[in-house]
Structures are given as structure tokens and as C-alpha cells.
Length: 321
Image (cartoon, rainbow, N blue to C red; front, side, top):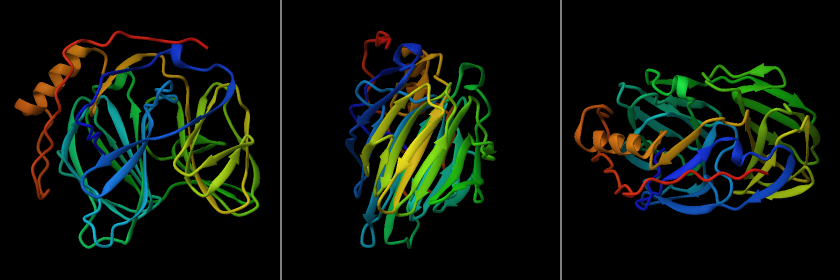
């Protein structure tokens, strides 16, 4: 999914200066962003004061939206570099096309994983006809320097492994949870899991104390380490935990995101992750003028132009806690 913000700003993310090295409970409120004509997303990362969770660098939550009489998701061809996109649905379908020639419909609880590497472009749209409801999350994973120029590729995994406990089913989207590993390719130690909770669940999820974690509430309301987390919000948990208490009185859906703190400082702007203002500037020029990002065929519409890039490089700013 694209960042369609026409006033996109440069953000310096990553680095140990932003990591909380102990357990905390920071409830993050979303910023509402329009995505095309009929879809509004709640942006949880990057967030004021919280830029990344492990290698997870971008999180949008959308829906559930009634799109029966709407076009639904319509994201024109746009570029990516230096990251992986993770498409995750609870309701609806999204048709993915990319400059490698991939054409794939992603359905609920299926993993659509696109690794941009040095350069790729893609589009995303609700199929015609499409289901009445659209509900899901779009996430980005930053690629470390050693792998950010990897060959671009797309993976689709319809069957993902699960971890179960009384009242809880955890689908492992990426990485490893409680010894169970997703087939999706990763380049840093991390985890992404979809948690389905039945009414009356009282569970403790095993965690890695070296990871930092956050929980995104997709639906319902659960108490995570005693904190109520309403749908559409995210609770940042810091590091140093070996388990996570989760309780709910009603059905709820959560996403657990975590990973080793991302050591490198990155520069994120629009749909690019790089290491310098100059690198971002070159990528924008390549998208507007050159063949680097390839062409997406079959999308009914024109590709997305890049917004104007701020002329002054952003100075890194860290904080130690």
C-alpha cells in the first residue's frame, strides 16, 4: 500500500536512541489519512514519539468499511525501495499487481509479502465485484543495509502456522512465535502474529525479552497487560518482557508486532526507505523520469506521481530512555 500523503515529510527512524529498554505501556492514538476516494486509514506508525517497533516501520489500520456501493481500495501504481510490504486482511479482498508481473488476490488471513529491495512498483485494488466489507492492516518492514538492495520479489502464503491456547489462536504472519515460524521471508529477527480471542480469554503469550513489542487492536477491546486497547489503537510495550497477559470479556482481534531493535538509522519519505536525503532524492527522480521501478500493467488508471520532496535534509534526532 502506498503512503498517499501529498505533504509527506522526511522522518529519521531506527537507532537505539528511540528504543525503550524496559517494559512500558504507551497507548498510541492514530492519525487519520485518506487513501483514495472511499478508504480512510488510521496510521499508527510512524507516530509522534514512536517511529519503529523492531524493523516494523509503518502501520496502517483500515475498516471495517462498507464498500458495497463504493470502489473500495484503489491505490494506483507507485514505487517502493528498501522495505517489505505486508498485506493482512480480516474482511474483503485486495488484488495485487506489480512490476515483476505478479497478479494475486489476497484474501483474509493470507499473507501478501512484497520485498521491494532496490526497486519495485505495484498497485492494489478491490476486485470487481468485491465483498461488502473491507478490513485489514498494511505494514512495512525496513530492510537492513546488508539486504536493502536484494532482488525484488513477491510471496503469497495462503496457509500459515498457528499457536493455540485456551481462548486464543495466534496465526504467525512473519517470524517466529513460541517456536512456530512463518514461511514468509524475513531479514531481521522479528515477529508478526494475528491473535483471535474468544469471550472470557485470559492468556499469557510467551515473548522474547530481547525484542521490543507493540499490540495493534484490530477489533473488539482487550486488556493487554492490564491496559484497555480500543480498536484502531496500538499499545507500545518496550523491551524486557518474557510474557504478555491478555484478557478480554468479548471477542477481539489483535496483532502482535515485535523484533530486535533496529540498529541502523533510516530515512523514510513517501514510499521509500533509504539512508540519506540524497538517496531519497535520487529515488524520487528515478520514479518520475526513469525505468528503475518498472511498469505495472493491467491497472485501469495512471500511476501515482511523487509529491514534492522537502529541499533541506532532516537532521537525525534520537532520544534515550
